[in-house]
Image (cartoon, rainbow, N blue to C red; front, side):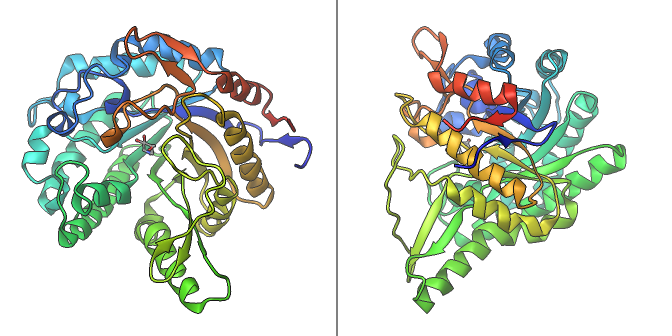
Length: 387
Ligand code: IFM
């Protein structure tokens, strides 16, 4: 490893969460009928305790989402109590000098919107746009970064191809239609926010992956790798690249592709849920993003590791490769670890543990893992230790 791995001045070191995964009590959300999260981590009532940890762990930024189904339980009626709640949340962070990054759509939707067909219909974009503008008008002074959509391709595939997430469909036409409507929704919201305010920072959280051919000598492996890379990493971004102030990167996956489309990874190190740990991939993905000439924030990167055996190395090695990309002139300005606290991992439930802070789901007690203190040292010194 290189020595003295400094990060740029003003680099953001933080962590992320998403409302349905941590808040609890999100009974108006479409997920409630498929995979109820119950009281989850009760973050809705305990956010102050959780945010105090952010400060104690020296983090200077936090990404979270606003649950649309809470603030607009019934179509067209914005709930004052819930709007005040998120104002309190944002105030609490700002008072502690923590930069705020707010996601508007992180996989969950109001039931009424889902019943209308959600993003399968172009005319429904209006409702998301109205919600986004309401939230913007309420909190514009308190939000530093806006993320319109989290991982659009994951959402569309899980919900409209793989039958895993609500509304559990398998229909390629709907899948593509949803993606196209999400592109349009992003662009409209980007324009609205910029019309309302000059100094606004709007981006997206994209789950780009590192693809490489299984055999560097196989033309067919190289061809399918190119196609996969284009579809997963390029297509969506190319459509919105003129409507972005920054790119949010969620990095989790590496794929060695063998024709026709097999994934043949070495899997030398894997997480509790069998995901390969491949830190160098983030370097290549960041280099790929350089051409957009936009600031980049790593908006998610983390590991399911209940025993906290791999997390310290995971953090160190990913930050090492991010640092290397920065020295290759990629404009990376921040890193948000997934996640601040253990959380509801969608169809996998509460088993996988991604948190820097462990949650005891019986007592709801919070306990930072050892790796959280390791990360805290990096946040404090702006520097990656060699060991
Ligand atoms: O928990 C999810 C998050 O909601 C979106 N990105 C990936 C994480 C881990 O699966």
